[in-house]
Length: 106
Image (cartoon, rainbow, N blue to C red):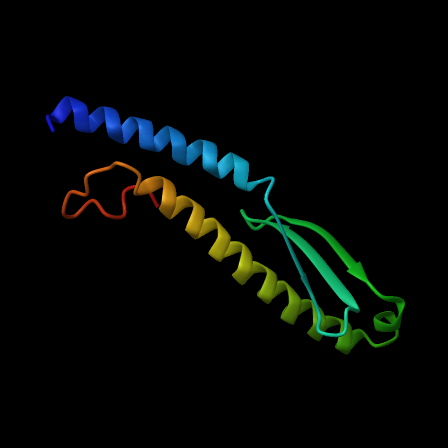
């Protein structure tokens, strides 16, 4: 492939990555505590959309804080995995990898 063709592919892939990033703002990941008392919805781009707290957790501040940390970390981990999978799929489409440029589209 010639240099101009490669540059065209890079631009095309960059545009697809940007479109995918925008779409990931609409991909929702739901996570909840094992007992269902705390629920969090986050986008694949890690923007929190909603937090639902059962009234039972409002009586114990420390327990609520623990639940928030645990469930938010689980939600962020799942959202990150979705995000990375989607972006990896786009960045590897029909694009010749040049040594040293593997991280260009991250």
